[in-house]
View 1 (cartoon, one colour):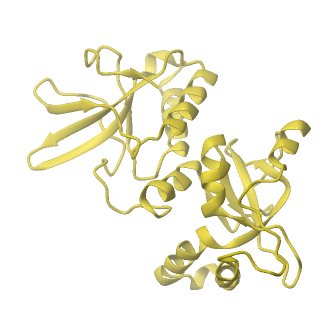
View 2: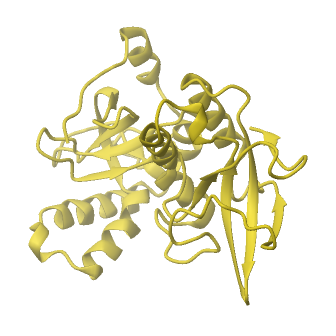
View 3: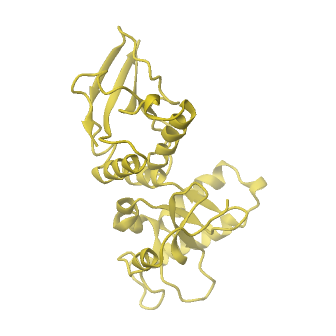
Length: 262
């Protein structure tokens, strides 16, 4: 993945200001810092394992240690990925060198989720060691892990056709599904892409004994120059959401008073 900087100097300087999750790697060690360094050492050892030798146990250990490990940051701190989204770049610290510590668990609450950043680990021209979208970080905050295997959401993009006799319930997603700060980021994203007055609802469908749910937005193909453009927009939105979420687009008037502004 190629990475390039799209931020003006003043934006980079803002991102480079001291943030509360940082701590100097010097004695006396801050509380929990030794444990964080142990996780950093394990992450370094795991990254050294060739891709062909990585299995489920490798992945489980890597994802378990990643949130609490200490990293240094790159310069500039925030870069843009090939997908156009902003990523805070974290690097494995040089052995024995003093560095300013950045820990995902703490950064997430401090500024990553509020400002709409993902995280890239050891960005390289050919391929980073790991990439976390904003949605991956959001899932860590909501569910305690970057990825969730099971959920009430559809396992694929939901159907945008609501049958006349289909049993459905509508409501608004709770803070545990979509926090206010994420809703604001989605609102800003839609408006930046020409979608005025974006709205949403939570659609729950019952099929026999199974109940599934989708996040629905008042976005339809007719608002775009082509069906492909619409599909690309909907796919791009998922960067802000946990990977197991499913989304659909529906007309504003499908459910009377069901949609609410983001």
